[in-house]
Image (tube, rainbow, N blue to C red; front, top):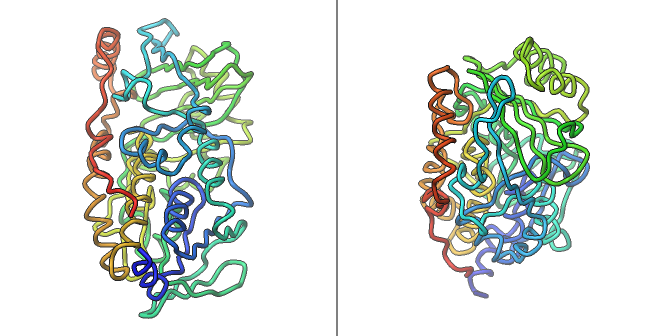
Length: 400
């Protein structure tokens, strides 16, 4: 082990990670364990709290166990007990155990608030690596002997390796590989997420309302006064004009749901005034390669599966684990990046295949597809829970 680390210190010991959400802190943890000198840059002023719940399943559960944060995440588990499907008038179609929808393993999978996961990952490594908050990468000069990074704050530093862990709309990917449109696979849906008052008194449960092409959800992760609200709708082309215009986002969502019943007017009103509105398209990232020179991508930046799969967090955690291990055990960054992609790409692609373009089972676009979905959820009340094989479709080598 000492000889291995000596080689890393000589050839690629200084690593810059862009992004401090999930893949970034996880990668920083493992690289620090292997003896690398790690810096994480994050454009936000601090670790972001709150956010909607995310799932940790299959192989990713072993990653958080090996990190020593599994117990903390168990304590943060939100324990969703029921998902209710409603017809256009708000009548009950079926109420089922959430695990029957996700193909998860009862009593094994974890569901936690995104902020709780980020805080656990950050807490595991914050005292051991350098975090630069309120800054980001402005330019990269990838040379034979290292990557010169110019930060937006004005400083310049040289690193042996740079990793983009900065999400679906990765700035690092754009600097190195070109415009996002080259790799963006739009799946035909947009969504808006926000918090709002818990008018229905929901507790540890969610409700999903559908008409063809439009859906709404209210999700209570506990017994509080607020819930997570979601408005999801199909759209033939991605609304690029609205990506950086919150007013346009709010208007697009409101006009799409105009005239709908049930609780929709209340959701739209909350969306219009929410100070935590998150609007995006439902899409994946598909790339022929995840690295170029001394720069690599991990998590959603490399292979976002989309939130419809529920696997973005797990793919990110697994990718970070494998990338760190390969960097620590290969003779140089090129061999490490090749091995990382060879080991991880199949797992990522299997999870991307859990949803296809225009065919999200929970959000049907036509009346016929909605009828099939309703029949499916009624049948799920009698089916046993089982784990999807895609969730564990990778074997993790031991920590070297």
